[in-house]
Amino acid sequence: MSSARPAKPARPQRLDELLFSQGHGTRRVCAGLIEQGLVRVQGEVVSDPGALFPPDGLVLEVEGRLWPVQATALVLLNKPAGYECSQKPGAWPSVMLLLPPPLRTRGVQPVGRLDQDTTGALLLTDDGALIHRLTSPKHHVPKVYEVHTARPVDEAQVKRLREGVVLLDDPVAVRAEGCEIIGPQQLRLTLVQGKYHQVKRMVAAVGNHCERLHRSGFGPIDMPEPPAVADPAPGQWRFVTDAERAALLASGKGVAKAAGKPAPSAG
Image: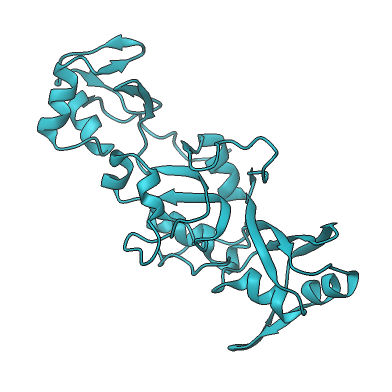
């Protein structure tokens, strides 16, 4: 029998402290939101900032939006083209502008990066250890890309991508974990690395060119390319569920160690 003891329930916390911990402003601002009747708990308006609630599994409604109380935030954004995965962007606006102020206040950052012209599944979190866990190649968390090419694709290109290609600035060959032809000029690539512009450079290495790129999967999370219905819609976001978070952590191999920096763009 296991000797592990079940985790103790977290102590109840003041409602204004809970709002503050989730990024909804200063303590004074959070208290004001509550006093104005803009916060509901279990469907009921709570106007006392000092009201106590256990944070485990608690879902607040703040100004009409549901906010699950999370020790660390993890959200899924359907990234549209024309946005950079940077908090200090250059020529294009930052994906952070697509998120509400509470998430930006919490300091969420992309789990890996997508180029400005790459669309699809982008995770963001304020948990540095989780970023390392999901982006480190030794953990083998798969990312799936739909690649639209300038020229027709053939089995010879697929074979080379599966066996490995050498990129110009790296003598070590990189290979696709999976590769299949899904259209005359369309590939589906599965990678576990996150090198700079990796997909585009791999496609170029086999004599083709990437015209359009969409990340349709991150671990167990699927985000089909339009015209299929996606959840959420392009430019929109949602919280990752507890079940999805657990599946993400189980989707790779190895054990996370220290927190690391975000991985470079694989787009």
